[in-house]
Length: 296
Ligand code: SAM
Image (tube, rainbow, N blue to C red):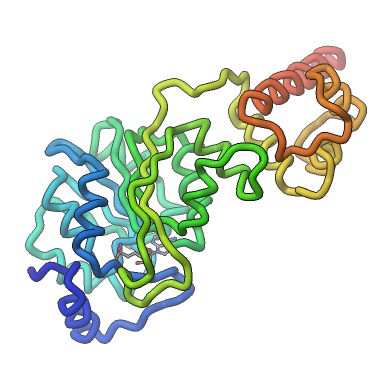
């Protein structure tokens, strides 16, 4: 099969199958062999690896993945692409094409069935409209993952490495830093895609920490606190947490928690780093547990 990283071959496949791009699915297909090589090199795929590809499109990167991995599982939402993938990947025996939505599919089951529960590698040129839910979902669901190497919008790549004080800093920065060490692999201009996206892109690699950099009593509560803190950026942290509805403490108890940690009542969520969010969520969790015990 011809290398789809070559734009002529991509055009031939699109014409052969009379494929129409669906904007709503964030379809920007890669047409640059150098970028494809960089992604493959960065993802460090070994002979025994199972790779999950999110959104294979017409199978451009999938071809490269199949050449390197033991097995590739590719999940594609657009039904029109399924027969195309069956055509462009027909020479490979180590590919499973799944027609489905990556946000709804049971990835744990795939890992169990196809990799005996061992950590997988995720490699993708992501659909940008759902980058955050995909990455947060992969981490928060605790699917055994070794690394994630993905193309994302440049601005999102920047956000992942940010700390307090930058306007890009937010829930995604904290989630990524809690679970992984982000690394920028390459900046990728719009002309490497068909059709060209309006924004710049970047390839990033997230290698999962063996142990999170901070200790928390309840991870899902930490992320509730983080999300609540950034949902209402213009409000003080105490108001943001109080308005969230997910945190069963009174405004006074929230303010008291902040005070106990030495924060001013006017503090905003975006000034706290990961350690401070961890301390705050641990303290609030203790107060919730103490309140529950009193009621029992
Ligand atoms: N991997 C291909 C490439 O690099 O040329 C295509 C990348 S394109 C940026 C994103 C792909 O994700 C599209 O094929 C799109 O149809 C697919 N997609 C969009 N939303 C999806 C979802 N929720 N689940 C699975 N695939 C999705």
